[in-house]
Length: 361
Image (spheres, rainbow, N blue to C red):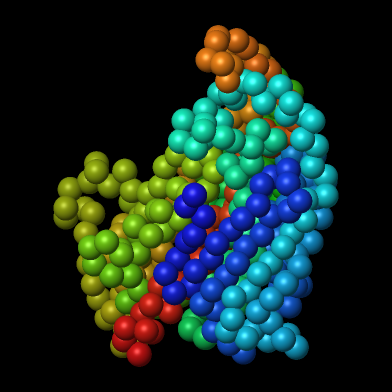
């Protein structure tokens, strides 16, 4: 069911949103990396539900349990299994969905493909699946920092919510500013308007979407490969595998189509013995390979599909009907999507760093 990601740093996520728990098995982690459950918990706490007034009220502590792959605080090189138990599952809130397909969810398409689905909160299609990715990414970050690029920084933030756009400089934005507000934007002036919009949408039983931007600073040059293993292609796959995503662009993105070649090109220059570019419309990747400049990309997230108003749909017997959303849901996925975007970027970079070392020494 497409639950495996990566080549050398490889993870398999498992579990359903209202089952006993969710988790991940990670293979390819080098031995002797310091790792405790606290290392993983920091990132899970950023992703978990119930963390502010603008997220789902589902109360989950999302406590990580390492079941294998470590000994005396160090990785063994063997598969690492991590479990997070579901504590506040309420499958009864979804009983009506057992016989009706939720609009813009995976309910109908899962039945069309597999002939069966877990209707309790969406099962594998729920964003709760991303717990395994975030847990694995906490390990990926440690590998990157300790084995390859100690100065590498990766910061994602909410760039826009509907038509409210934050004024953020990706070259200078810092983690504390982003984490210092419940929206997780890098522009303090945009916080109040964004919060007000999300609350207004929730009050109407509606939802809203937006864009998360991510910058990777101090990334080594040479990651990625031509043709099928381009770095931006793997980043795009990772980001578009996240629930509710609808678009990916890197560097100038679609706006670059409005420029001429002369306007768009990034001229090279030497600086302190290093090849640099005078601009960065490429977004840090050229020919599928990182060039050492900041990698900057954006991910579009649609409005949350579950809304608390009646909508047209069909039953599992393929008859027309209506359905009103129930359960506990985010009116806007953007604030909790920020650590998910960082997680997928970490997984892609860690895998490419290991692949680069394996090929080039």
